[in-house]
Length: 139
Image (cartoon, rainbow, N blue to C red):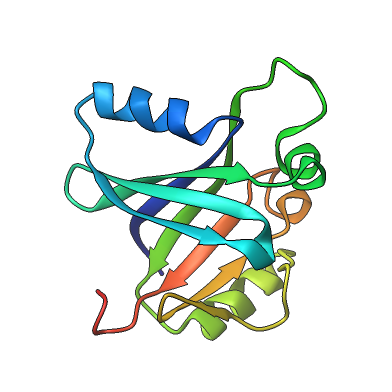
């Protein structure tokens, strides 16, 4: 059902600073993007044989508060674990619903040509999972 870790999403307070830190560890920037509709900027770094770290910086104070918290000293937190699935994402969602897991949206959403579904953390043991069904062209 679950194939491999695709990426770990980390919300950060200062994207340039977090990027500099990952680069000091020898990681290379794979790509960046800004998603105004989601009020974030993101940068992806490849780690090893295909997993990535996604740095996510909220671009408004409301988005920052919602995703990172109110405490001034909070610099980063793991937000989600994205797992590539090897079967139909809708079938896996149905299986997980049978275990009591709820999703942010009732159907998978397309992001970068892939289908994605995000669990509600309070229904998946406090962890938000992002299921990723890769398009064969992007796999």
